[in-house]
Picture 1 (cartoon, one colour):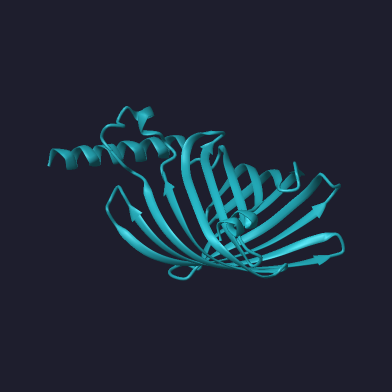
Picture 2 (tube, one colour; picture 1 turned 90 degrees about the vertical axis):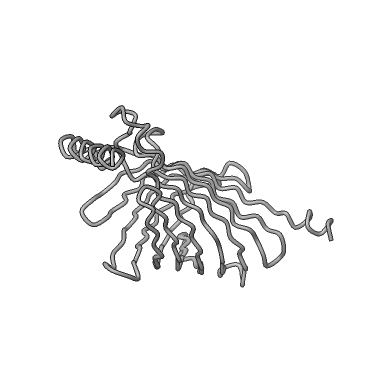
Amino acid sequence: MKKVFTLLVLLTTINQINAQSGDTGEDDFGSWFMYFGTNKIADKWSIHTEAQFRYYEMASNFNQLLLRTGINYHINPDAIATLGYGFIETDPTFTEFDELGVNTLVENNSISEHRIFEQFILKNKVWEFNFEHRYRLEQRFVQNNFTGESNTLHRARYRIQMTLPLTDIFFLNFYDEIFINLQDSAFGQNRAYAALGVNVTEDLSMQFGYLKNHFTGANYDRLQIGVFYNTDLRGIFKKKK
């Protein structure tokens, strides 16, 4: 009974502080640090690797860890089908428990998610503009570690991306992606992105961009730094065979 009372006091304190200060993270400029890799293992097959570290503030106040992998089948150079898995760990509270002096009262307030996804990418070129259309379905198995509640959610995503080469080294990248829930309210979120890209080598590139992440009633501004490293591992697999 004492633990329940302590928990209620904790939640009430957090809600009062957030209400007074407006600390939802919406007014802070956050950051996402990202790695993406496409590792070719055969003429038609490659492995997708991905890691993202997301923060409510600039490289501080942890928000989310995202790890994703998948197997890609290259139908042709302009069409790719993917089956993949992702693990996501999210801290949904902008206010740090340490700031309140009650960090020992809650052992784990995070949300853990195991995700299966199916994806199809189509590419085309118009003049100097390279377009990419990404269609994705997700089956999300979500565990709230604070309440113990579990949910299975389904979502569809569509992203249109445009890349414009400026020189052999520099390029611009833009995309807009909409998330549609397949249960309850249909609109999930929308992401609009603009970035300057740099081709470091033939296989390595980086992007420095800005993301506007829109939810119903909330908007978040994020700096994005992405590293893209594509490797050709076909020689290694042939040697093993």
